[in-house]
Amino acid sequence: MSGAGSNKNNFYTENRKFYLSQIDLSDIVKDLENNYTDSGSTAIHSYEEAQQWYDMSLKNAGDICANFIWPRAEAVDAKGATFKDGVVEWAPETKENMKALGAAGYMGGTLPRKYGGLNMPVTVNVVIIEMVSQGDASLMNLFGLQDIAVTVYKFGNEEQKDRVLPKFCSGEVSGSMALTEPEAGSDLQAVTLKAIEKDGQWYLDGVKRFITNGSGDVSLVLARSEEGSKGGRGLSMFLYERYRDSNMIVRRIEHKLGINGSPTCELQFNMAKAELVGQRKVGLIKYVMSLMNGARLTVSAQALGIAQASFDEAVKYANEREQFGRKIIHFPAVYQMLRKMQAEIETSRLLLYHTSLAVDYQDMYERKEHNGENVKAQLKEAKTLADFLTPLSKFTIAELANKASYDAIQIHGGTGYMKDFPVERLYRDARITNIYEGTTQLQVVAAIGTLTSGLFFKWLEKAKDLKAVELADAKKELLRHIERFAEVTERVKTIQNKDFLDYAAGYLVEMASIIYRQYLFLPVAEKHPEKRDLFKFFRTESDARLDYLIRQCDLAIHTYGEKISDLKNDLLKKHD
Image (cartoon, rainbow, N blue to C red; front, side):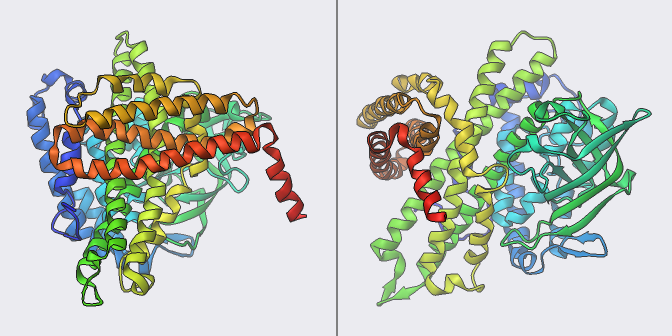
C-alpha cells in the first residue's frame, strides 16, 4: 500500500501530488493570470511557473496541517467551542490554527490578488481544504467557509467587495452562511426570517438555527424580502457584518456528536442592519445554489480528509499491533479492509479533483462571459457537468468517510472505541458529512435528472476513445457496464411512477459513481503501471457491486413497480 501509514511529516503526500498532476489546469491558469500579461512581484508568467508555485504552496500547507494542526486536534475536540454570556469562543488551539493559516496567506485561496487572495484555481485550493480536514475536520468548518467570500466576490457590489474581501484574505474575519431555520432545514423555500426595508436601509428580523460558525464576523443571510410571499421567489440574500451592527445575538451553541471545534449557533436578528447582495428575489434560486455548490465541494474535501486520516491511522495500527504471534496487517481480513479503503480513497480523490476542474471551467466561462465573450454554449456545458459532479462527489465521498472511519475503529478493535486513539474522533467527525449541506438522499435528488435525461450517457460516449493497450479488457468491460447501466436506467423509467424513480434513484446514482470513477481511473492506470494493481482490485470489487445494484433495480421493478407505495403503507400500519 504505497504511501500508506501515519507519516505526519507532510500531508502533501506523493499520492495527492500524483492525482493533482493528472489534472490539466493550463486553460484555467492562463485565464486566471490574464494570459500571463500581469506585472509585479506576484505575477505568474507561465503555466510551468504556476505549477511550481502551487507545488511549493501545497508543500507548505501540508507541513502546517501535519505538524501544527494535527497535533492540536485532540485538544480542540476535548475543549470545543464555548458559550458564555452571549459570547462564543473558539478553543485556544483553534485560534492558533487559524492564525497560522492566515499568516501563511491561505485564507483567500481562490480570491484575486487585488484583495490579498492567492488567485488559485479551485482544484488547487480543494487540496488545501482536504489537508486541513485531515489535520482537524472541525477547522475546515472555519477555514473552508471561504465560499462566503467567493459569493460576495461573484454577486456583491464593488463597495461590498472592497470592504469585506481583504478582511477575509488576511484572516481578520471569519464567516457563516445563515440559511437554516427551525422550520426550514432542507426546504429553504420555507424560510421566514424577514428582511424589512426602511428609508433605503435593510433590517433583518427573525431566527436562524444550526448555523456553522454563526458567531463569525460576516454572514450571508437568506431572508424573505417580499412581504406576503411564499416559496423561493420571495427570498433575497443579505450581507450582515457583526462589527458594524450589534443587533444580532447568539442565543446558544449546540452540543454535538463531533466537529466540536466548530461552533454551531442559534442566532436571533433583532432588526439588524444588513445590505442586499445582488438582486432581490433571486437569493435562493441563484445565490444560495451557487453558495451551496461551493459548500458541497468543500464538504467532499472535508470527508476525503477524514477518510485519509482514518486509513493512515488504521495502517499504522495494523503495522504495530501483534496478535497470535504476528502483526495484524498480515491477516487477510485486515489487509482486505485496508485495500478497499485505499481503492475507494484514491478513486474518490480522482473524482473530487475532476469535480473541482469542472467548477474551474464554469468559473472561467463566467469570467469570459462577464468580459463580453460569447461563450454561452461552453458555459452551459461546464455548468451542467459541475452541477452533476458536485452532488455525485458529496454522495460518494461523505459515505466513504463514514465507512472508512467505521472500518478504522474495527481494525483497532476495542482500543479504537476508546479516546486513546484518534479514530474515535474521526468516526464522530465523519458522521456529519453526509448530513449537512444536503443529506446523501438530497444529493441523489440533485444528480438523478442527469441520468434519466440521458446526458450522463452522452458524456460517457468518450469512453470509446480511451487509449487502452495494456488494459484493453478493462476498457471492453467498462463499455459493457455503461451499456448495462443505460439499459437498466431505461427499464426504471418505464415505470411511470415518481415514487418508484425516487426509490430506485439511490441505486442508479451509486452505479454512476462507480462507473464514472472507473472511467477516470482507467487512463491513469494505463499510463502509470504502478496503479494497475489497485485499478484491478477496484474493478473486481466494484464490478460485483454493479451486478448487485442492477439486480436490485430489476428486482424492485418486478416486485413493486407502480405499487411501490405499498412499502410505505406497510410501515404506516406498523407505526399505527
